[in-house]
Image (cartoon, rainbow, N blue to C red; front, side, top):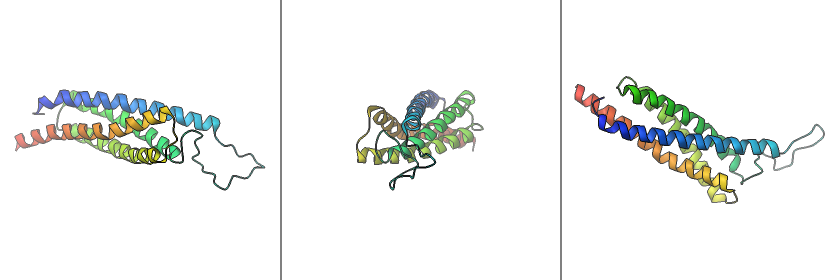
Amino acid sequence: MANEGLKPAAGFLLFLNFCMYAIVAAIGGWALNVAIDRGFFIGPSLQPPAQFSPIFFPIGNGATGFFVLFALIAGVVGAASAIAGVNHLRSWSVDSLPAAATSAVISWGLTLLAMGLACKEIHLHGRNAKLITMESFVIILSATQVLYILVIHAAGGATVRTRV
């Protein structure tokens, strides 16, 4: 692509996003493990309580279950998107841009969904330090992921303009 000046910025954002998505996925995996280990078990003779939720997390608040699940999905998809972005960074051509941009936009959408649930969880209060860390990372990722998308599109747009 013609705009080689944006390649280092894209590489830095890609590395940063990959590391942050991996941390989000790790903390989300931990939270899911805690929920499975300490969750509510319904035996054959027990009735579920009236306020029973199938996404019950013994840590956090009412939004924690949904937040953890969507953050875990966003973390895994975001890490996979970063791996696809490495291929684009290696070739740095217009031909590899659609795959990198599409996966980045999908992971950004999932990150925004998780960010909305993080905001709801912050609003409800009552969570531990690991969940606060995961909320912070998801909110920061929603900004850095869109910056990465803008950088690779700016570089791709410069190439298209020079071809015409």
